[in-house]
Image 1 (cartoon, rainbow, N blue to C red):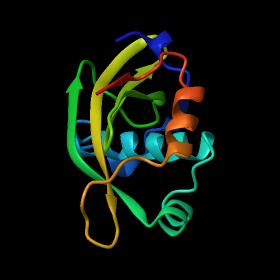
Image 2 (cartoon, helix red, strand yellow):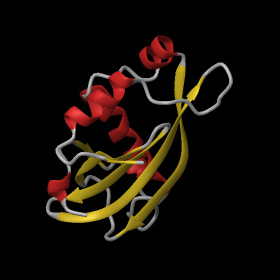
Image 3 (cartoon, rainbow, N blue to C red):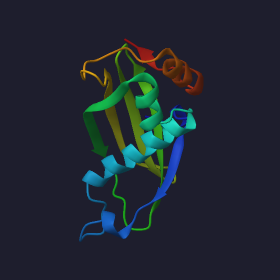
Image 4 (cartoon, rainbow, N blue to C red):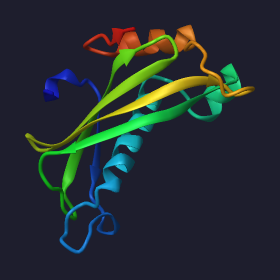
Length: 146
């Protein structure tokens, strides 16, 4: 994965509570960083999640898979950029591809898979066309489709 594949980054600083005794970010916190980037991605493309999305469409977005690969350690007070992009957009699911960089060094890569569901029955349902349009208009590299 290359940094230039991403048009969205969210900068954050590693906090003391996120590192272990070895001054290395505890592995579960990388998913927190991914989640923060996804939230900021939604905000950037004009999607008010969760309240605006759930209220407007009667739908919600469930995480069904999360993966991470660790390439280099992060420590307390490191400033990092978390890249986030929709790499695949299916009828009812999507894949966010994420990367974390400390300067030019990629420290982490990962993916989050989400499914769009009707709130009434928690069954998969197609993405609202306005959301699909917002994603495809925003992304520099168009997501693959299923």
